[in-house]
Image (cartoon, rainbow, N blue to C red; front, side, top):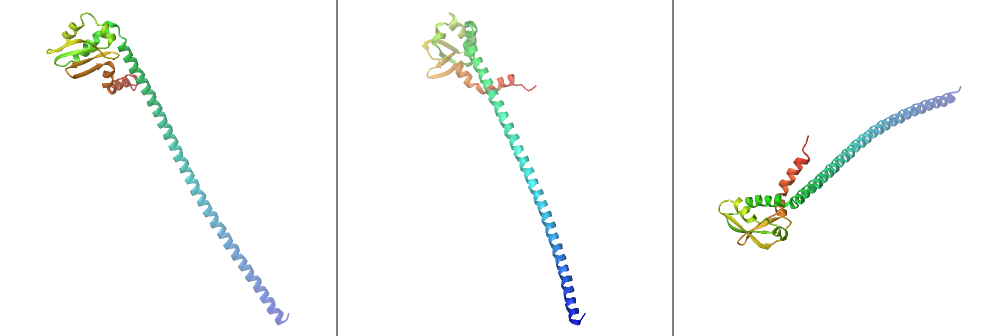
Length: 198
């Protein structure tokens, strides 16, 4: 081999070695890039999975909360309906009491609500027409000392109960007014009776 051939051979070998080294270095860099990308992708996938799990849990909690709220609202509405129906039934029972019980109840209400002094008691047309004969005497006997009531010939459109009149002042003792006045208290009592916790 001549000197020139030897130089060409050395250059060729050196080029091959350099190309092999460069190729190996490029392979290593490519492997590192691929490995880093794989790690990064795995980390991003894990982050996405965790966010999805958290999002799913939040949606599940919201759905459970909404379902619970809907259930509570439905139970409350059902209770309110039952309470309303019970109060209406009680009201209707009062209005349709047998005559002796009805007027006995009116005496008790009058004794409670009558004011001192002379007054007048006004009934519905129906009640005025069926008043017991000695009602005014019985009425005045149950009132506090210093109170007296006269039965008025005037009537009012009320379902039951009466109106007390003292000069220009009226005390509405109709059943509907008494129920309205005590509505919250009555509802609480009905709820306690119907829905007492065991």
